[in-house]
Image (spheres, rainbow, N blue to C red):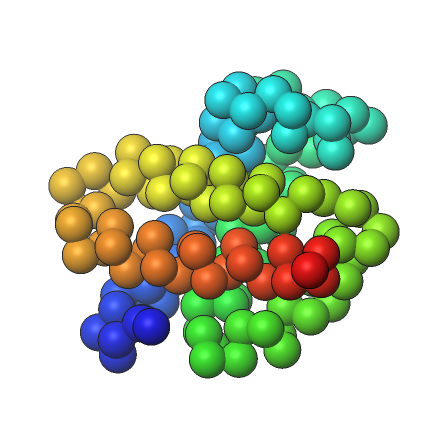
Length: 141
């Protein structure tokens, strides 16, 4: 699915942006909540206003999980099994929400990276995020 060059590009992007993990993750979440209000239902117990501690913390967790997953894409299913089970059985998050979030993450990455988010970067990241977002949904089938 992903070429060696694409995998290296994905790792480079996540590594370069890790110092901004909380901001990027929070912005992607906020975009999702704004664009798709139904996704907020899973976060009703948290303060998800812009720049809130909850939003920054959860955004950072998601960003770091994406960054960590990029280091071993071939074993994504195995490495994400605990997250998959947690999101499917305990949180009961609809699989489509992961696809919505992936789209919001791509838009956010483009905003943060500007001209450095090339068509190649976009294509590679789209492939990776599609694979990543498919993992939590596997338990629903």
